[in-house]
Amino acid sequence: MASELRVDTLKDSSGNNSVGMAYVAGGSAKAWINFNGTGTIASRDSFSVSSISDNGTGSTTLTFSNAFNSADYVLNYTTGYGASANFTGTAPTTTTALIQGYRTDTGASQDRTYNLVALHGDLA
Amino acid sequence: MAGKIIADTLETGAGADISTSYVVNGSAKAWINYNGQGTIAVRDSLNHSSLTDNGTGNHDTSFSASFNNANYSVATNNVAEINHARGAYGVGVAIAGSGTAILMTTSAIRLYSNYNASSTSNGGGVDHNLNLLNFMGDLA
Image (cartoon, rainbow over all chains, first blue to last red; front, side, top):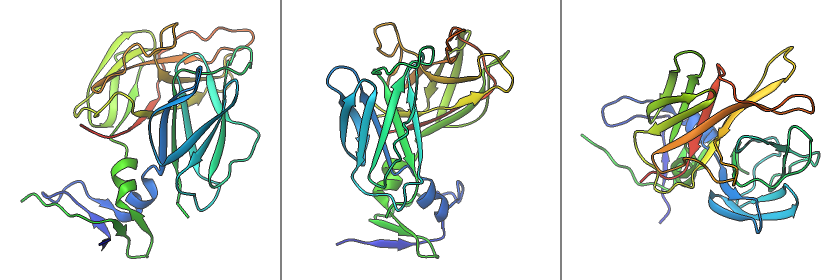
C-alpha cells in the first residue's frame, strides 16, 4: 500500500541536519545519467532517464522517465577536460533534452567518453 | 535513538509532494566547494574526506562514504573570467588521451581544471579559485 508523509522539516535522530521539505522536494535531482558517448552510446548508470538517442557526432537526446512540469529546468552537463557541452539551439521539452559535446578550440562536434548530466526542476 | 520511516511520498505543508524515490536517488551524495589556488583548501563540503593537490589544475578528492559503483554522475562548474583572453574555464573529470578517466572509483575521483581552448589559445591547466562539484549516485 502506498503511504504518504506530510512534514515540514526533516531532521536526523539527534535533532541535527535539519532541512525544510521545500528544499528536499525542490532541490533533489529529478534525473541524472553517466553515459559513454563514443561508438555505440551506452548508459553506465542513471536515474529517471528512460532512453538516450545518438543523433550524430556529439549530439544526444535524453528522454526522461517522468516529465517535468515545464521546460525551464536546470541541466548541468559535464564532460572530461578538453571539451565542452551545452544545450543546442533546439529548445528542451518537458520530456527530452538535446545536448551537444564539442571542442572549444575548433567548435567541432565531438563524441565524449564521459557525459555526466544532472537535472533539477519540478516534475509534472 | 535512531529512527527510520518508510514512506512512498513526502509532502510539504503547502501540498507540494515528491516521491521518496527522488529523494533517495536524486539527492547529491557528496558536494564540495574548494579553492584550487595556492594551498588548496576546502570551503565547505558534504561527504568529502580529503583533497590532494597533484599539480596545476590536477586535484584528487575522496569521499567519506563510498558510492556503490564508479558510475556516479558529476555536475561541475564553468567560470567566466571577465576581460581574460581565454574567457571561460572550468573543472571536469580528468581523462587520459584514450578517453578513460584517470581516477574515478567508488571512493575517489581525479579532477582537472583548465581553460577552455579557443582558436588562438590552448586549453592549458589552471588552478582556479571556484571549484564547485555535486556528485549523484547510490552509496554503498
